[in-house]
View 1 (spheres, one colour):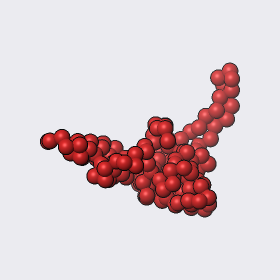
View 2: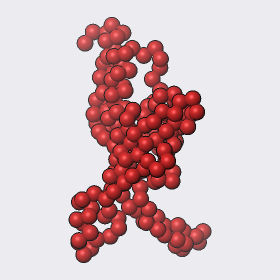
View 3: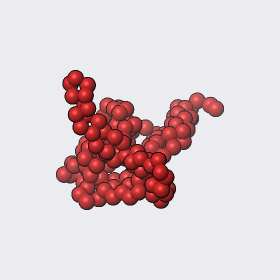
View 4: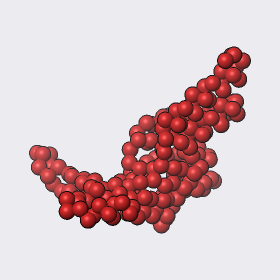
Length: 166
């Protein structure tokens, strides 16, 4: 599975879930399970509506969703939750004039359970190393700094496994 960095950084909308690979079979892609995507406006966002300068871009949501592997032999389910925002989506004509515009909801994940595999861990990886890497995958979306710290721990564990003294 090649590393496509854009999969991990861009928000998504309900109609176009990124091509995330299944963490169980590593073959299938995750699709949104029918009727599982739920979102609601946060209390803070509702409070902001009282401001006379309020605009739709101020809206914030919390979402939950269940994704399912499209590999018929797997069918793993992955839960996801995170936040959403509203953005003005403008379409232009070839000569640069506005053709159409609409407000769209975009969502940014914070958690996946089980965690997505950011990259493939080789089968012969020592358990102490793979556990630290898997923990980094759990933390990647909600705390990239913590995820990076666990990658550092995995490197330290690899050095220990190779007999290199501290």
